[in-house]
Image (cartoon, rainbow, N blue to C red; front, top):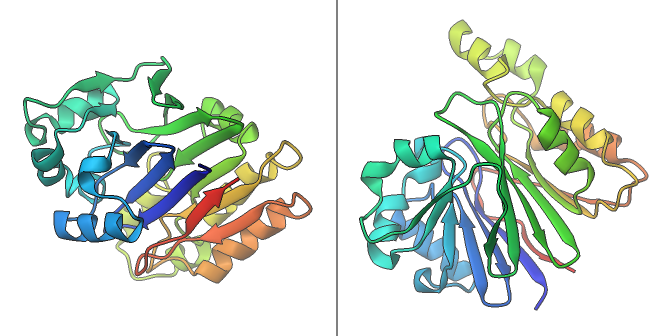
Length: 256
């Protein structure tokens, strides 16, 4: 069975990504309410009781909204940083096994998973570096800057899912209060299209096959602008480029 990746939700309202290989099915974040989560999983051909584990990037509501209800039904093992696990402790039933990922690689079926610290305004947020077969998958969707460890992971990835949250011109000239604009622009906020494109430009020529731009702002971005910035950065690389939207699921990808 090929490696499959399903973006179940991406944006400021809800985030959830499903990564499948053989009989191992990993859910990264559980930001959908349980009814929408079950519906989205069904669309991907997966039942909640078929999941193998939940990985959390951080504790913000749009990443954990459905966590408690999902775990009540499935008692899945939960993996994340020590800080995130502490922040969501009240949401996790006692029967669930918790694994704090602190710079070590954890084996989950065929997946070798390592958490990478990222800068964001949360307890201890992380992205994930995942090796499986001949793929290196890097997923980082809430961060205000690209630290060196993440940049190194991106450079060696065959698949990247990276935040491209806002267009700087739209943000600065938009309706958000100044304090919120400053939070978004800060090193602990969110990546702009330009920051994302700069990070992706370093990845050309290293076997990169597929890129998904994630967590786009409805208010401060346009999918066409995000695509244009990253397409220019990836020009000549041969990598397929996909852009998520808050209103729809997808993409659903088979990563050969």
